[in-house]
Image (tube, rainbow, N blue to C red; front, side, top):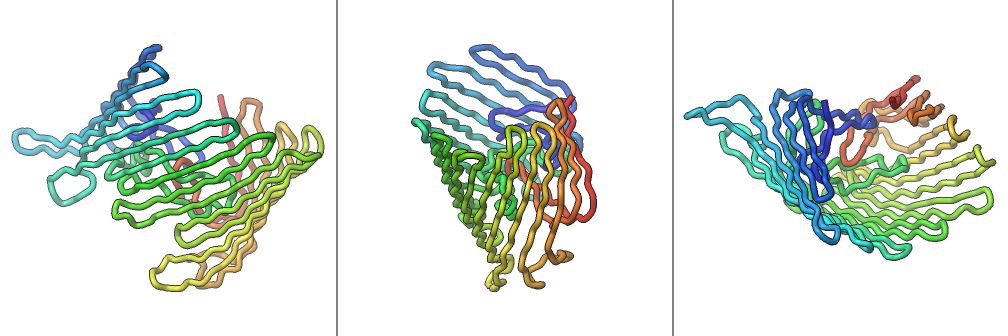
Length: 385
């Protein structure tokens, strides 16, 4: 089997991510050629779940001043339907991309079209899809800026390639946070019906790091799906301590306002204590035209780290939800847990988790998986060999 990606994943992105339990590998043959002036890749393969025969290819050429142009494509038969004169249904997807890297900037532009029968059931008509992704990054001294735009319509390629996840993964404009409560209401990328913008501004100098970020996503009917404003600041180390904090505003499954903070105490060169505290005020809107009230959530963690191998973490989560605001089968808090982690010599790790946690989502790059509530002991690890 093999993995791979064309461009930034609009057409093809076969990958494995243990965090969200994704494995969209293909079984078949793949060949590549690389040269200073360009290269190409071609494959013939089948995903693990749908019985499809996929044929794909990607080629690029390097031009002057860091310019690169590339094309990608893939085709397959989605079913065994045969019409008059031995006519068959054949889906295809193709994109063209341009990108350039300069000393002060880099930009990327990719546009694609897709033909498929997997959107409107009950007829023999095909549907056309389209995708556009653009990204511009600017650098000047301690400042950097990043702007992204996406416009996806009917552009999911081979849905359920591993039983759940599609074979393509268009770039996501949402962000994965290191803070637990900021990930409490994620927005998975919808390659069939999504458009939006993202803007990041970063300042980094003298140990200080400041970030301002904004995201707005809509569907093709211009109805808002997700909105984010985020600001964070990390201070340089002062003596044995380092501080960081942030504030976030999210409009997704209700309004969410979040304040987070972190204190790291360096006990010596190998040992440290890290305290994280998060508070989120939530006003849900699951039911239209109904005031569902508001509630607050708190999340605390205290980690003792013994570099480079051991870490011990205590976790506590609280909320003041009314019974009417709780999901079915949701338990009353508090939710306490602990985790012991050991880093292996080759970069893998072993983790022992024990306690109680709420149901929620795990997300990575715009792909999300639901995790049910759990109480007990869990042992998991990642091994590299």
